[in-house]
Amino acid sequence: MRAQSLELVRPSTRRLHAFWALTKPRVNALVVFCAVIGMFLAVPQGLPRASVVLAATLGIACVAGAAAAINCLIEQKIDARMARTCMRPLPRGVLGSGETLAFAGVLGGLGLVLLWRAVNPLTMWLTLATFVGYAVVYTVLLKPYTPQNIVIGGAAGAMPPLLGWAAVRGEISSDACLLFLIIFAWTPPHFWSLALYRAQDYARAGLPMLPVTHGAEYTRLQILLYTLILFAVTLLLYATRMCGPFYLVAAVLLGGGFMRYAWKLWRAYSDALARKTFRYSIVYLAALFTVLLIDHYL
Image (cartoon, helix red, strand yellow):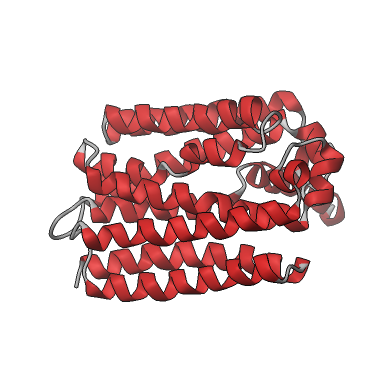
């Protein structure tokens, strides 16, 4: 009897894990984190209301997870041809297209309703626009057709701090737009670092990523240039007096580290260095937004 029970539990557990994997939890953790930081930065003094933070965090997380699931649904054939993504639930046949679509619809719908009812309509509409930008504009219209996909589509990925800001303030300000610009400028060097050492994967899948269409040397130069742009954008927060000296010092140190990786990548490429650059870019963004929060309360 116990063995039979275990046999029943294991498939259901695997399916639950598969649904969880559809939401790309590691990627979306950074999305939600930046949105939460935006909520706290939106309050000049003190803390945002806990109920708003909780509702907005859950709502944004649900819609982000739904967008990731739609991305997996649309790209399942591409994912099956790539080593990095072939173990996702749809290529492995663990989940079907119909149940993935239903899952995304329910999860996204719940998130939007929560944002509408418990936060404010502006946040709901901005989050819906982000969903469409990532799941439709980027995945369907940009990624398969242009090597600038990650630049143009990066606008959707840069939205989280704006969503958090709108959740608390009910409006968008120039300070919130600077937070948007940071992630917008960060996205190309972050993603192209990955694309460099996964170029064969993308070529096999037929995706026009920059290393495939323009070569590795050109891509490395673009990474360096966008990293310089990113460094300049991060300093704007101090120039506009949004942040203080603590942020400035940390931004210079973190940005200097990123530029060092980008310079080395341009001058002496290796797959190992590209992996390190990609990993540092994730740490960089998380650390920069953490510093923003600390500086805000100093």
